[in-house]
Image (cartoon, rainbow, N blue to C red; front, side):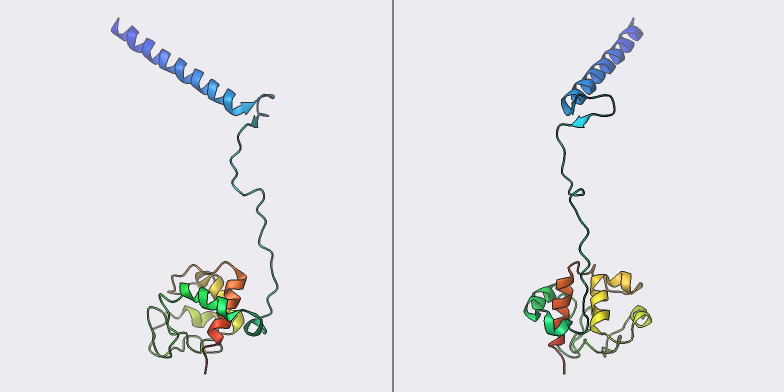
Length: 167
Protein backbone atom coordinates (compact mmCIF):
# COMPACT_ATOMS: atom_id res chain seq x y z
CA UNK A 1 0.00 0.00 0.00
CA UNK A 2 2.89 2.41 0.79
CA UNK A 3 4.47 1.77 -2.60
CA UNK A 4 1.16 2.63 -4.32
CA UNK A 5 0.99 5.94 -2.43
CA UNK A 6 4.54 6.85 -3.51
CA UNK A 7 3.87 6.05 -7.18
CA UNK A 8 0.58 7.97 -7.02
CA UNK A 9 2.36 10.99 -5.52
CA UNK A 10 4.94 11.04 -8.35
CA UNK A 11 2.19 10.71 -10.98
CA UNK A 12 0.23 13.56 -9.39
CA UNK A 13 3.31 15.79 -9.25
CA UNK A 14 4.06 15.02 -12.91
CA UNK A 15 0.49 15.88 -13.88
CA UNK A 16 0.67 19.21 -12.02
CA UNK A 17 4.02 19.98 -13.66
CA UNK A 18 2.68 19.22 -17.18
CA UNK A 19 -0.47 21.29 -16.60
CA UNK A 20 1.68 24.22 -15.37
CA UNK A 21 3.91 23.97 -18.43
CA UNK A 22 0.88 23.93 -20.74
CA UNK A 23 -0.63 26.98 -18.97
CA UNK A 24 2.66 28.93 -19.17
CA UNK A 25 3.05 28.21 -22.89
CA UNK A 26 -0.53 29.26 -23.52
CA UNK A 27 0.01 32.55 -21.73
CA UNK A 28 3.33 33.27 -23.42
CA UNK A 29 2.51 32.34 -27.01
CA UNK A 30 -0.33 33.50 -29.21
CA UNK A 31 -2.06 31.02 -31.55
CA UNK A 32 -0.64 29.65 -34.76
CA UNK A 33 0.53 26.28 -35.88
CA UNK A 34 3.00 24.38 -33.76
CA UNK A 35 6.48 25.88 -34.11
CA UNK A 36 5.10 29.09 -35.61
CA UNK A 37 4.02 30.76 -32.39
CA UNK A 38 4.64 34.45 -31.94
CA UNK A 39 5.89 35.60 -28.57
CA UNK A 40 3.48 37.90 -26.76
CA UNK A 41 6.22 39.62 -24.81
CA UNK A 42 9.54 40.11 -26.56
CA UNK A 43 12.63 41.03 -24.58
CA UNK A 44 14.67 43.67 -26.41
CA UNK A 45 18.33 42.76 -26.54
CA UNK A 46 19.42 45.47 -28.96
CA UNK A 47 20.91 42.95 -31.38
CA UNK A 48 18.39 43.50 -34.15
CA UNK A 49 18.73 47.27 -34.31
CA UNK A 50 22.43 47.30 -33.58
CA UNK A 51 24.53 48.31 -36.51
CA UNK A 52 28.25 48.06 -36.72
CA UNK A 53 30.12 51.24 -35.92
CA UNK A 54 30.76 53.11 -39.09
CA UNK A 55 34.33 52.87 -40.15
CA UNK A 56 35.61 56.40 -40.19
CA UNK A 57 38.69 57.08 -42.27
CA UNK A 58 41.24 58.61 -39.95
CA UNK A 59 43.84 60.93 -41.38
CA UNK A 60 46.78 60.19 -39.08
CA UNK A 61 48.78 63.15 -40.42
CA UNK A 62 46.21 65.67 -39.18
CA UNK A 63 45.01 64.04 -35.94
CA UNK A 64 46.98 66.45 -33.79
CA UNK A 65 45.65 69.55 -35.58
CA UNK A 66 42.01 68.46 -35.94
CA UNK A 67 41.30 66.63 -32.68
CA UNK A 68 40.20 68.36 -29.48
CA UNK A 69 43.00 68.27 -26.90
CA UNK A 70 40.66 69.57 -24.16
CA UNK A 71 38.45 66.50 -24.59
CA UNK A 72 41.60 64.40 -24.69
CA UNK A 73 42.51 65.69 -21.24
CA UNK A 74 39.27 64.18 -19.91
CA UNK A 75 40.05 60.87 -21.65
CA UNK A 76 43.52 60.92 -20.07
CA UNK A 77 41.78 60.46 -16.73
CA UNK A 78 41.62 56.74 -17.61
CA UNK A 79 45.40 56.69 -18.11
CA UNK A 80 46.30 58.77 -15.06
CA UNK A 81 46.29 55.78 -12.70
CA UNK A 82 49.32 54.21 -14.41
CA UNK A 83 51.01 57.01 -16.40
CA UNK A 84 52.44 60.44 -15.62
CA UNK A 85 53.05 63.34 -17.99
CA UNK A 86 56.25 64.62 -16.36
CA UNK A 87 59.52 63.66 -18.04
CA UNK A 88 61.27 60.82 -16.23
CA UNK A 89 58.38 60.20 -13.79
CA UNK A 90 57.54 56.53 -14.35
CA UNK A 91 54.70 54.89 -12.45
CA UNK A 92 53.12 51.49 -13.17
CA UNK A 93 53.53 52.53 -16.82
CA UNK A 94 56.17 54.69 -18.49
CA UNK A 95 55.95 58.47 -18.48
CA UNK A 96 54.13 59.94 -21.47
CA UNK A 97 55.93 63.25 -21.80
CA UNK A 98 57.01 63.65 -25.44
CA UNK A 99 55.52 60.25 -26.34
CA UNK A 100 54.25 61.32 -29.79
CA UNK A 101 57.22 60.81 -32.08
CA UNK A 102 59.34 59.09 -29.41
CA UNK A 103 61.01 55.75 -30.03
CA UNK A 104 59.01 52.81 -28.69
CA UNK A 105 60.49 51.53 -25.45
CA UNK A 106 62.61 54.64 -24.92
CA UNK A 107 61.26 55.93 -21.59
CA UNK A 108 64.34 56.03 -19.40
CA UNK A 109 64.11 54.00 -16.23
CA UNK A 110 61.14 51.88 -17.29
CA UNK A 111 61.46 48.14 -17.78
CA UNK A 112 59.49 47.27 -20.94
CA UNK A 113 58.18 43.79 -21.73
CA UNK A 114 59.69 43.84 -25.24
CA UNK A 115 56.40 43.15 -27.03
CA UNK A 116 56.11 46.77 -28.21
CA UNK A 117 59.48 46.78 -29.97
CA UNK A 118 58.29 43.90 -32.14
CA UNK A 119 55.36 45.85 -33.64
CA UNK A 120 56.67 49.40 -34.01
CA UNK A 121 59.77 51.54 -33.82
CA UNK A 122 58.29 55.01 -33.22
CA UNK A 123 55.11 56.19 -31.50
CA UNK A 124 53.56 57.84 -34.54
CA UNK A 125 49.94 59.03 -34.28
CA UNK A 126 48.92 55.97 -36.31
CA UNK A 127 50.74 53.54 -34.00
CA UNK A 128 49.31 55.26 -30.91
CA UNK A 129 45.82 55.17 -32.44
CA UNK A 130 45.94 51.41 -33.00
CA UNK A 131 47.62 50.71 -29.66
CA UNK A 132 45.02 52.73 -27.75
CA UNK A 133 42.22 50.86 -29.51
CA UNK A 134 43.32 47.44 -28.25
CA UNK A 135 46.75 47.29 -26.58
CA UNK A 136 46.91 43.49 -26.19
CA UNK A 137 45.55 42.90 -29.68
CA UNK A 138 47.97 45.29 -31.35
CA UNK A 139 51.01 44.24 -29.32
CA UNK A 140 50.46 40.68 -28.07
CA UNK A 141 52.48 40.05 -24.93
CA UNK A 142 52.45 43.64 -23.70
CA UNK A 143 52.21 44.02 -19.95
CA UNK A 144 49.71 46.86 -20.28
CA UNK A 145 46.46 45.69 -18.71
CA UNK A 146 44.21 48.41 -20.15
CA UNK A 147 41.36 47.12 -22.36
CA UNK A 148 41.53 50.04 -24.80
CA UNK A 149 39.39 52.95 -25.95
CA UNK A 150 36.39 51.97 -28.07
CA UNK A 151 35.58 55.37 -29.55
CA UNK A 152 37.71 56.66 -32.40
CA UNK A 153 37.15 60.27 -31.31
CA UNK A 154 38.46 59.50 -27.81
CA UNK A 155 41.66 58.01 -29.25
CA UNK A 156 42.18 60.98 -31.56
CA UNK A 157 41.54 63.50 -28.79
CA UNK A 158 43.92 61.68 -26.44
CA UNK A 159 46.70 61.68 -29.05
CA UNK A 160 46.18 65.43 -29.57
CA UNK A 161 46.36 65.97 -25.81
CA UNK A 162 49.55 63.90 -25.46
CA UNK A 163 51.11 65.88 -28.32
CA UNK A 164 50.80 69.07 -26.22
CA UNK A 165 53.33 67.55 -23.81
CA UNK A 166 56.45 67.62 -25.95
CA UNK A 167 59.74 69.42 -26.11
